[in-house]
Length: 188
Image (tube, rainbow, N blue to C red; front, top):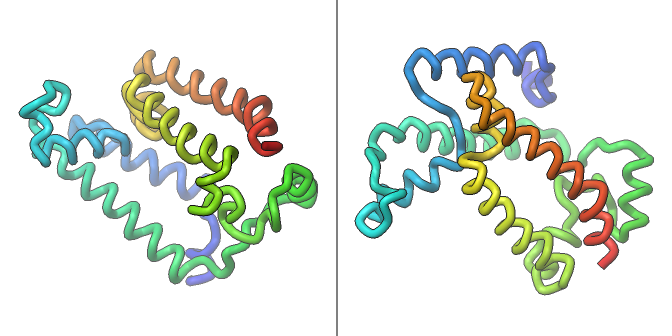
């Protein structure tokens, strides 16, 4: 049983579970999205007194905070007890390509230490990837009115046209960064 749990679940198990969660949320009139938790936390801390955006009934969103806490606890349990190895299974061709970009030991850990560490933050490549990239993700989430999970899972299941447009934009942006921006950043 533990061997089944420590492996990625197949689509025919995970997909219906996501559908059940979304169907339950639709019945209860709720929406799903992780980025809205930041707004809820700011409202809890009193930001609604100075900014109209944070002035809303945050008590109706407590379930979303509990869900986010469950994500963190579930990820911690999976990391500590269910993952047999920290190595990431990637193809030999991908490892060779990443090595050509100067990434040391690709696949040995979840993220390359040479790119995602406190030391790399002080490099030009690290600054762009961590600080500028983080800013762009935050800006894009706010500009699109939600995050990828909110639009792609909740918005599309509600048949919302703005979510479809946002998801198409996410994919176009992801392809643009993958094929044009990332190769340039990795050579810095």
